[in-house]
Image (cartoon, rainbow, N blue to C red; front, side, top):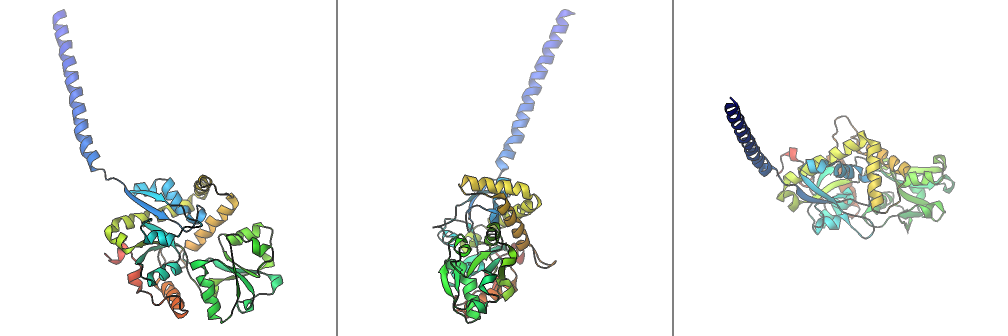
Length: 342
């Protein structure tokens, strides 16, 4: 009986070993096709308009939370700032995607660069002209002959177009990336963005009641700013990548607005990595204003859409003032995968 028990025990061991080998073999057979079926991430790069800050929270959140990776993209966000140009990076192939103002994109398109709008992030212009009430400047006409701070380059297009429309000449003073000259009384009027410099002025101790504020959009100049752009050749080479990038970016923005504290943590982390001063209060203001600016004006609107009417207003104003020779048809400039475009 002892020998029979030993034979049975030996048989059971053999069966267990065979079962284990079969299980391992089956697992390896199943695992190999799955591994082979995994699609590698596509490398892509984005250049924002400026250094890390909440103005670009959606992209940093999408990167940090793995949203781009989930959409099949291995994204690198390039460093922008002084000495860098998002438009030039796009044109020379350094960046696959870039954040540009509509005015900038139209200028480069008019000059022959085949830029394409993939999504319009900001839906209403944030640009302001601010003066102290003591200066007695209540209207655009009151700025005639006054010292007005303007940033250099494409970002000065909206106010210059506005001055041309009103047929006034201002004394342009080059404005740096601070509002110190305005605070010290060196200029009568300063350019400002609602989500940024305006809040900086308030934080300096100036009461809102001490200021006269003119939004350019209230003057019929809704020169909408941040949009996502790429080159036509990049789009035609891989339209699926463009779709995935836009979808992931908008998802990043939605997540940032739904989880503002976490979004601020992420933005501030990237700011510190870039050795930039990070004030949470200011970044919070910026994120909240970006939400205001990105939300469609009507219930029928859609996040990320560039409306034909906004496009036409900006294009015609720039053409009338000699800033561009012409501008393309809306359907040639704006690409949406649901519009039947190839």
